[in-house]
Image (cartoon, rainbow, N blue to C red; front, top):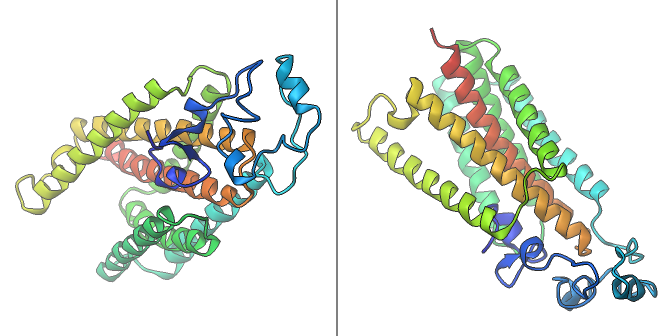
Length: 292
């Protein structure tokens, strides 16, 4: 099974078509980290290979010592790349908001930017290695899209974007807290169930979009401004939170197994896509609850 996030399905974040964290988690007293369970061992990426005490740690069941190899992904790398990527999104959104007035032209520009961002995201997703240029480019165009639609929402529901930002931060913070506290265990079964729900949701939303486009559901169908639309929006945000737990697990496993440092760009890319998903859904939800 691959990650819901396409960038985590690339080399370094999956092994044998499965989650490294699900199928190859290091077990106490076992050789998983040093040999069979390390997805980077075949790539020369075993951070314990140069540590003379690693085998002793594994033999006696003690947690392995910090890797001595250099060039491996760390949490600082992930945080730095994520800050750069999200910062680009914010800068693009602010510039679009400030320079593009609310108009039909701006709306068309937003759709065009979203399509370019989608293409860049797909190109990066199918590349074997991270491309910072593609990732930053994706973030810039995504920022333009978010800036324009945020301004449009704000023109009708004043303060909606600010509330959506706070809501996105709250969802991300709560999800991280729940994950770090161990209240959610990201297992293969958990991933299968969540991905099934997420895929079904995306398919239903695609069908709903077609019905709206052809005039069968002129009121927006499942995306209406009524109670049904609010329920769908809440479900979408919960799916976004589910994606975040998979992202956190993949990052944690990448650090544990000594992923190459450049994989931090993929981690930042995945987190950015998930947070954009949550923000857009939160923006819609705030608008629904702000209606008279």
